[in-house]
Length: 92
Image 1: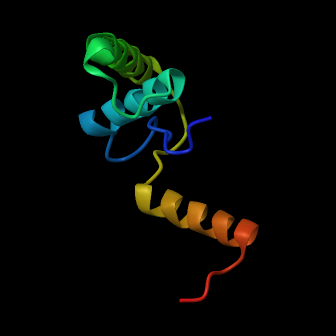
Image 2 (image 1 turned 30 degrees about the vertical axis):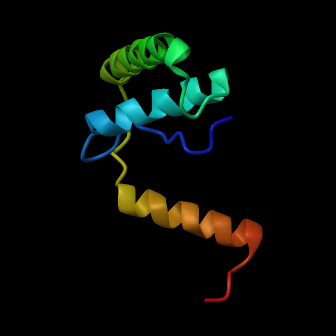
């Protein structure tokens, strides 16, 4: 759905407040069709982002796992490898 929304659970260090806010922002942008809402829609847009962010925080805080925490560097390398396999290596 929203390609820029990343997994935030079970990372070391934990997701930052900015990361948690960015995901709901992208989600609300996708749902509304607005990158930047008009002044008439700004309050509703901002309220939706805050409500989704609050739900995201609550969800992340309540999830449990026995798996080892992931590191961003390892996950980024895996994503890069998947992309290279899917789209081929790009010439520099």
